[in-house]
Image (cartoon, rainbow, N blue to C red):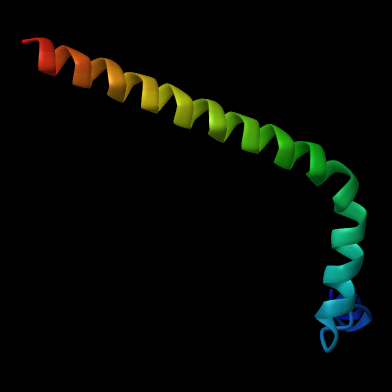
Length: 60
């Protein structure tokens, strides 16, 4: 357990972060695209619901 912790350089986490980002970039990009599409869809749905409720309130 101790050997493993000593092997990992805790003094330079930036290098670890950069390598992780570089490795994860290839599969985070499509994930981000999907997430943005999902958020946009939710916002549109919420906006439509708001419009419908506003129309219903004004009609009564």
